[in-house]
Each structure stands twice: as C-alpha cells, then as structure tokens.
Image (cartoon, rainbow, N blue to C red; front, side, top):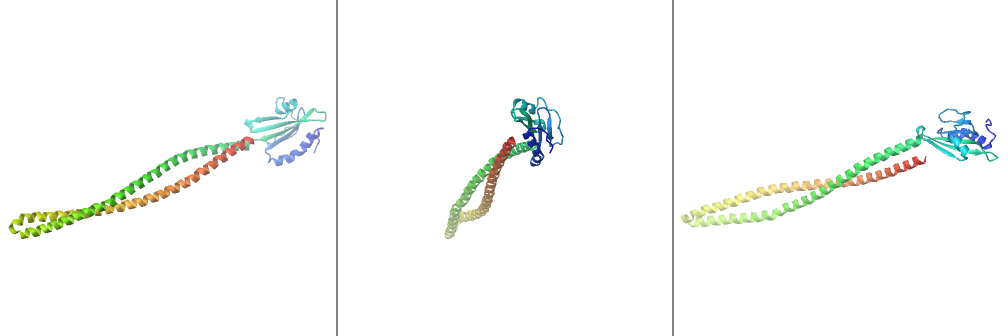
Length: 270
C-alpha cells in the first residue's frame, strides 16, 4: 500500500479501509484527508474524491479547525458522516478520518415500523369495535336463554290447566249422562231435561276436543322451544370460541405493537 501521509494513524487507517469496506457490506464510505485535500477515498457509490480539496464549510474542515469530532446528517442523501481529527506528534491536527454511513436501511426500517404501527392501529380499532359487538351478541344470547327458559316454564305450566279442564270435562260428561238417565226415568216430564243433558254432554265433548287440539299445538310449540334452546346453546358455544380466539388475536396485536415500537426505536439508533 502506498504511503499517503507522514502521520502514522492516517496511514494505518488507510491500510484498513479495504477490510472495513467488506465488513460494512459496502454500505459505508471511508476517506483520509490532510488539512487541505482528500488523500484517499473509498465510497460505496463508486465515486473517487482522491486529491479533491475539502469543503471549507464541511464537517472535515470544522473537525480540523475545532479539533473535535463532527457528525453531519444529510437527509436528502440518507447519509450520516463522522469526521474525526487526527493529531501528529506535535499535537497539531494533521488530517482527518472520515466515515460516511448510509441510512437507507434505517429509513426503510423506520418506514416499515411506521406502516406497521399504522396497520396495528387500524387493526386495534377494528378489534375494539368487533369486541364491543361480540359482547353485545353475548348479552343478547344470555337474554334469549332467559326468555327461552321462561317460555319452557310457561308451556310446562299449562299441563296443570289441561288436567283441570279434562277433569271438569269428565265431570261434565258424567253429569250429562246422569241427567239423561234421570230424564228417561221421568218420562214425558223429563223431555226438556233430556235436551239439556244432551247439550251438557255435547259441551263436554267439544271441550275435550278443543283441549286435545290446544294440547297438540302446545306440544309442537314446546318442541320448537326445545329446538331453539339447543340452537341457542350451540350459538353460545360458537360465541365463546370467538371470544377465546379474539382474545388471542388481541394478545398478538399487542405483541406486534411492541415489536413495531422496538423497530422504531432501533431505527432511531441506527
């Protein structure tokens, strides 16, 4: 390697540049300067500024004049540069080591984290809305279950009424039979009473038929209520599964949110 300066540090760094280039995956640029110009320059964009005068207002000039490291950030080029002054044996600044770091990956990482954060925010909004509606469905299912139970109790309570009506019908029928017998014994005097007895028996028969029809209808209703009850139970099971799955989704979204925040933090540190 050709000697570029009498300063040992500047020469040593110049020897390291080819290796540093490989270590940084060609994402960094390296340069060595004296107090006036670039002595050596290896850039990731392929340009060569060797022999070019340093900018009088740039970071290298400021580092040399102020005898301190200078960090410059160039947003338009997505570049961050570090200019470190190097002193000679006399204690005077004799040149500068310059490293230019590409921030394209940082910008991409930040953009990715912002997009991820925005997407997670949208998902969280939808999740909150879905959670609210899901809870409404759960409440409605519980209310429906209560009404179904009440309907089953009401239908079951009609059995006592039917038994009572059947008893009255049977007694009425028996009363009609007895009245008919007495009417027969009374011969001509009991003809009018016989008509009443027949009407009583007819009323009893009609009542029994009506009760049977109503009983059949209520049995059908009871069967339908049972089917609705079973369907509601299945619905509650499905809703419970949704709730469990949704809780897992919410947990995953929270983890994604933490990851997005971590990515953004990492991007700021790059």
